[in-house]
Image (cartoon, rainbow, N blue to C red; front, top):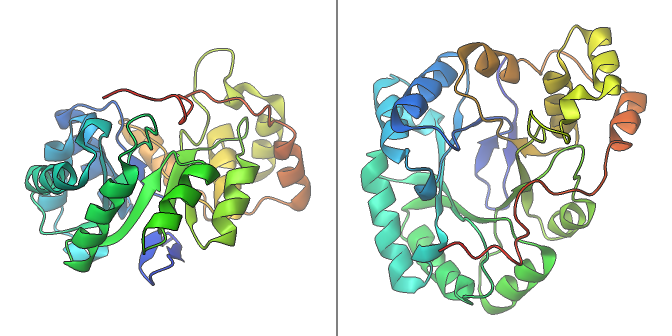
Length: 279
């Protein structure tokens, strides 16, 4: 089954489910992206800081799939923020990926302590106007970061990619983004698979999954889809990559969705965007 698409605020269409490659080496990313594309994925999400843009690009180049059918996202790292720095960093990413354009470019973190994201965004607007990027967006921005950005620039972000899973549903940010026509994309969508915070160990997910013949992870990914979110589960394992996209042949009931909503503890697993200052 073909992955549904969401139309962004500039008319560009993005597949609703894709592959994330965080923490993957170049070789692992190349294998994962190749596996994903062969199993129907068309959205691939990487970032400069992941150090695997070359591997992603190799897999894209060798895939045999027409470039316009693929949707490639990468992200600008914190230490590359600033107008001129952004232009240089984008050129490096494009070269590493071996592409003539990217479909979506994101500011990875607002890092408000550096106070550069407005100048950075103006460089994004220039690259977008030049046709080097099909859509521009942000990652890990809270409503107050978005407000500050939009008050000083021209283009409303097309996407805000944020930590979002059943333990941390980000209702306030989702509501703000919906109000301003910004699509929300979920990273760490199943909330991490180890440790005390392992949402997949919740009995309610196993119970729901049994009804549909699906795993707890597939139930959670379906929950994201039904909330209208874009979701990018990360995996370098062939079987998991295949399972993660197999979520479009069933539908959670209102009761299922309500039960999953009870798992929200408003708990982050990643950094707080107001405090994240890695350079």
